[in-house]
Length: 179
Image (cartoon, rainbow, N blue to C red):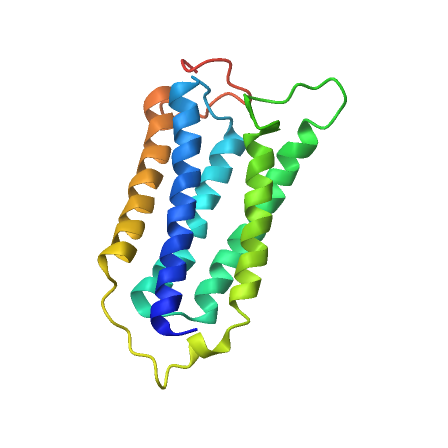
């Protein structure tokens, strides 16, 4: 994998994370479902998952950048598993609306597990880390757009609960958009 291919793959990963953050934000606004604290934590972890690809785009691919994302994905999978287990009992309808039969936290678990597998697979391509031949060039518009899109969606996802609920913590299971 060349440096250019690595940047392109990292940009695609960022666009995937942006899609995920946008879907969560859209569900919050369109379905009037205020996210619970665990949902907010999962969104933050998806945003933190973007740090590795952003660093790879800016400074070139390094194993440590992938490791940051990998550790974040493991933490995200743990948080998502916790929430899935909270709603696993028979008769528990779960929290929030379901999309294709799964709730957001179940999709988050699937997303974090997919990220773990993809990051581990990406680490198998050693040539991307050969810095004797690699030259860090300015990222193109495609990669820059991905970075700024993730940053903007992260800001919106962080700001919206603060605007809706204020600084005191949101209720454990919010009942409406009014906190």
